[in-house]
Every structure is written in structure tokens, then in C-alpha cells.
Length: 219
Image (spheres, rainbow, N blue to C red):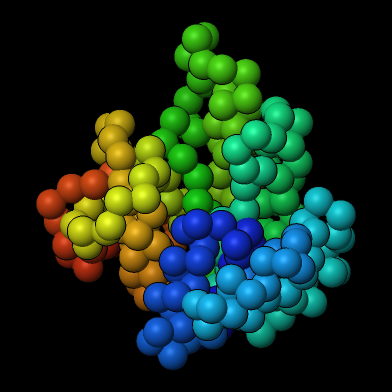
């Protein structure tokens, strides 16, 4: 399987790339900074330098052509303002979805966030509220497309060592989850075609990842 990951230097992306390459799949990470390429090489992934805030559909489609799936893991990152939450977390996700359709790639996984489906509470900080709204807009855009999309909404992310056990459901409530376990769930969703057209929330839990994915994809 050839998987292209937008935001290929992100903490979840690097973990997913390692999991993919360890089992013999091809992981391609789209990055903005050429200096990050070495980190991708260290996990066995191929880096492609492409600034999603300055590229057009044709530029991105050229890198997606021939892929089996696309994962949108890009984000404006800590320290960025509300404006970049819109240009990266929303506009770039839309751009990559447009490019995936242009390139004939049907499988598209979007990493979103718990709370993206609701208007942020009044006491939410301006930047975090902009982030949640941008993620929600990206979700809404994706659901209107003729692609095999899956939306994954992790809870509060931690750098704890993954346990391989999670709670995965349409609604989980608030909670934390390790980036290791998010990557493991993404890999399992990529392997399961019946996870298409599902929006799933993810927090830590007691269910092994394969069983958690099997439960939500039984129809």
C-alpha cells in the first residue's frame, strides 16, 4: 500500500509512517521544511517538499497520483494564530481532498478533534475556537465528496507510550489518548474498507485496537 500523509513531519504522522514502513508499505510524507526530510528518512518514509499554503491542486495531485490512500495530518501547530488555523486546518485539508479526487485517490482519512462538531463554548480561547471551527469545516467539506472518507477525532493527545487499547466510537466523551495509539488506529482504519463514511472519536480505553475497529465497522 502506498500512503501519502499531508503534514508528514507531525508527531502522529511520523508514528504512522514508521508503522507503515515496518510492515513493508510505502509512506510518503508531504512537508514544508526541507530540513525535516531526515526525520522521515529515519522512520523509512519518503519526504516530498510541498507547501500546502502555497500550492495549487495540480501540484498536490501530482504527488498523490498512484497512492492507495491519503491521510491529512497537517496542522498549523502550537504558537500559530487563528488565521493559520483556517489556512492549514481547513483550506489545506480541502486542497488535499480536491487533489485526491483529481488524482483518482478515493481513500481519504482526516485527523480531526473531539469537539469539532459543536460550536466552541463561550469561554474557549480564540485560537483554539478557530482550530475547532476549522476542523469542523474540513469535516463538513469531506462528507459532501464522493470519496471513501473516514474522520478520526482523537481526544487530548499525549506522548505516553501506547497501550494498544482504546475506546473508539461515534461518541466517546472527553478523554486523553496517546499519539502512539492514534497512529495504530489510523493504520487499522486504513486496512478496513468498511470504515469509510464513519466519523469516530478516540480516547484511551480497554479494547485492543483491532477489536475496537472491528466493532465500529460491523454493519
